[in-house]
Length: 272
Image 1 (cartoon, rainbow, N blue to C red):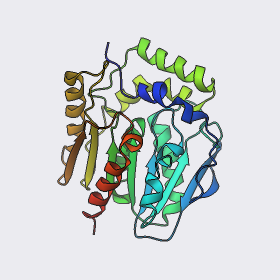
Image 2 (spheres, one colour; image 1 turned 45 degrees about the vertical axis):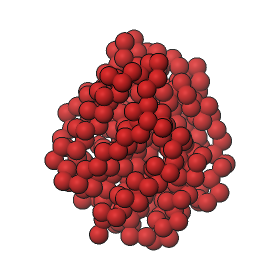
Image 3 (cartoon, helix red, strand yellow; image 1 turned 90 degrees about the vertical axis):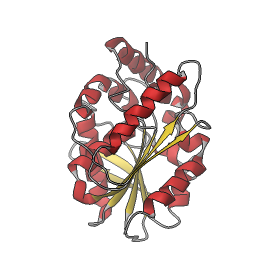
Image 4 (tube, one colour; image 1 turned 60 degrees about the vertical axis):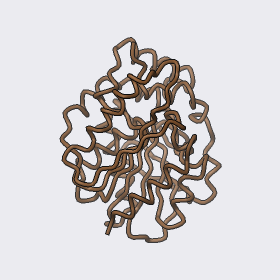
């Protein structure tokens, strides 16, 4: 039985789901009112040419990007926007289903609140990679570039119903029935079916970071399949860079934050 990479968010960093979001001093906290609920954002706006937007993976709030100061370092030169999806951190619960289509729609609302007509540079980890992918495809003219950090992909992530149930129960035990990660886990199979039907990414600079670190549940053959899945993100993309690392596990931004920062710098060097 293949262990899907998204599950690592449940098993390894689930404690971060329950953090109080009080460790983001460099950013201004604000509420974004949607039709059905409010989301909490954390931003630092200096009116740079592009807005950099972070999207977290399954089970993680925005602090997964601040624990190792990744967002703060990027903020030294760019406007930065982080937020907690519905049911995480200080954000309110949102309506079900919590699927990619809805998460992308809510991301659009968050971005529209801060972009002021600017294009965005999207950084997404794990399940967040599916969300920013859907956003970029639906909003090609608003997307400047994409940085994927060990993103989920339907070519690799193919959970059975039993596996989805396992992730759902793990999230529920960690955060409760209304926790954002719990509700998102219930739609894993449908989400991957949804993304399998998406067209190629828009032709903007794209960098993908892939963990090739082998462990007891992820032998080299498994990692090669994951690598090949990430290669598919480059279809029809002229400027595509694929970077691998054996020094990091799934949470590259935690294990190797400098790698994320360096590749962000490479990404922006490709922009006008």
